[in-house]
Image 1 (tube, helix red, strand yellow):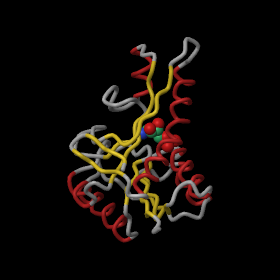
Image 2 (cartoon, rainbow, N blue to C red):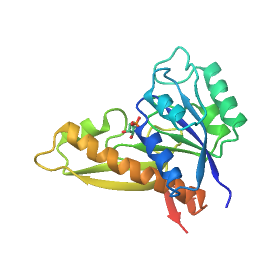
Image 3 (cartoon, helix red, strand yellow):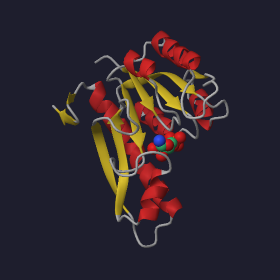
Length: 204
Ligand code: GRF
């Protein structure tokens, strides 16, 4: 079976990237990482990519804080196309994608969010859930559409919030599940097992 070519977009630590690298090495994931792109030159994820001999690049995001400038967006599209990416995985990429990039890779962009969507979208989802006092939270892998943390859900994992949990311990437990379900979701796509019907996905 042909390997799915991934383009992974990061901004920071890159532990989800690392989990994908490790799962590919362990033959749990029939994919290869064609390119890692960071909007932040100091992202530790870039070092993780280099250590694994994976092509990586910092592309300047332009003047905005939460989105790419039009020029930067074109650079991202060009780089992803040049590297023949089949699927874009947002892995802690801290910017909202705009229409041109979404259209260039329609239905081929996924994201991992550290809460059970549609609860707690946006920034600091683990903190939002912890402060709200929920007893269960978790993480969600979903297709990306033109609304933030909104597209059809591919996979979720539930994490129980225990009495003794702190925000930090909760965040760590969620991250552990993220590392598991992100690769599982990518593998489902690699096997062409996902069908989308409106908001719903089914596994065939
Ligand atoms: C993760 O919690 C992810 O869900 C969120 O940003 C964090 C990125 O962590 N979108 P890492 O860079 O993969 O370690």
